[in-house]
Image (cartoon, rainbow, N blue to C red):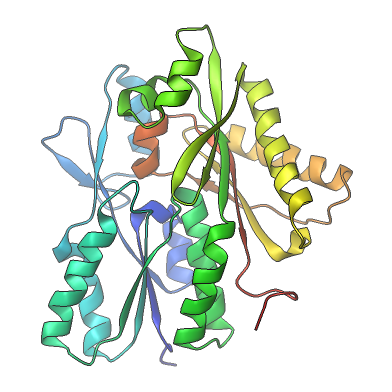
Length: 305
């Protein structure tokens, strides 16, 4: 059966390749480099696990990521334009990358050759695992029979509800990347001080500091609980996921602890998926980011029509 429209995202969405295939989504990869000479396509030339392993082994080396090119997007768009299949392309927040601009430029080139093509490029205003959840909500809307225009409208409505609550192994990578000057300044050179960070509307905000991993993770959990308590919807109206970096076992343990905490607080929740945070964000956080993504579902009982 021919799909009503096709969903494309850049590699910042950090969805596992098998899931992308299952949900019929196209991902246009970011590039990553350890020497600024050789760039590898993420998940194509270099596995995420190997990217983190190199980071852990090469201490003091700060890898860089590079956005998909106009040509990369053009190649992704072309088969659907040729086939008259409308496209929704979801890109990482423009505050972090020019990926969306590459997509918009590619759209113009495609429209010159295929004037009838329908391509909508959306600024997700979010990134990493949270962007992945947003992309999955787009697929869910499509698969539940929402029209192209209704899906776009709903995606625009829910994106502002997206939050990432997370912490990192240390602040060296954030400091090096200049991503979070306020937090780095607060922490100074204090021993084992780690930031707790919130990402919303495309920007990162400091949400506290603490010593040690256990305490910072507890604060991350508190931020999720506060978000749920302030919401007018129940937990079943949200997509929640855990994102981890190098240490999958820690990610799973954190997920299990989160499920048990949520249930203790009276939230009926069966499962939280665990996804690996990719290189696009990993270059800024270092190998040990860990936290939650949460966003309102595209389809739920209380969603506005």
